[in-house]
Length: 323
Image (cartoon, rainbow, N blue to C red):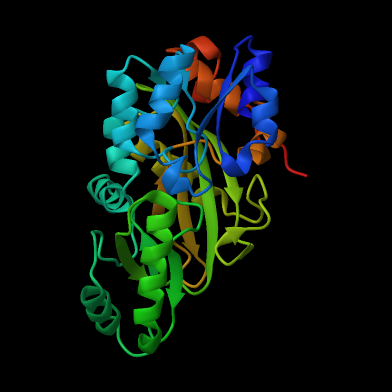
């Protein structure tokens, strides 16, 4: 997707690949390809120095981190900056905030955006047990990795007896996916809609590009996205957009960001869940209902364009077309 967009913009591309991906489509599409290691991501796609070296060897001016691995890694973004290579994503200090769910939740609290009960910091198994017990009999919790996203390192726990095993599995999965096994825990909202707001920003101004409903999931992996979110109270829709803009404007966001919320169907209110400071797989759903090319927009914003120059201030954003 990124290579095809770059080609339409007249940009040549270098692909990096592991042993497992030597015949992958992105390798075939790119003008150049660099082998960076063995199949496990810990020996290839999570090796920041190796990827930077590939960029230096090929004379690459920018690195697009995709939607996984190092895409939310502030240290990698900082290393790119120090090497004089543009990181196509937000500034390192913004990744420090949004790439770590605990710091993102602290920001939400500071900005008056509602949160569900949670530990909001790296949490031990003992602390998770104490938190779950504090919620009272019959309560359930959600374990979540502090780093990364995409449903990795995440499990619902409905019984205290299941906590130890779930905690170990989440931590192991997070370590494998993001190189960091820290978890936090929050109260599980049993009847929730999962609504995410698409944000674009130029480092000063931000705008929302409507929202997607991704409630239908299996094993924390989204199966179906609907945009705009159906049967959503207009006042709640406006509040969700405003909350997402408040959070991203507070950090001077540049690039694409998805701000995710849970809408409690029993209470009728919503809480902030996390912010994904990267392009998401489901960005194409928003493109389908607005006609915008978000991948191209992300590259243009990284190159220093403003929303005004791109004709993408809030007043310019086209209305989402429902089906």
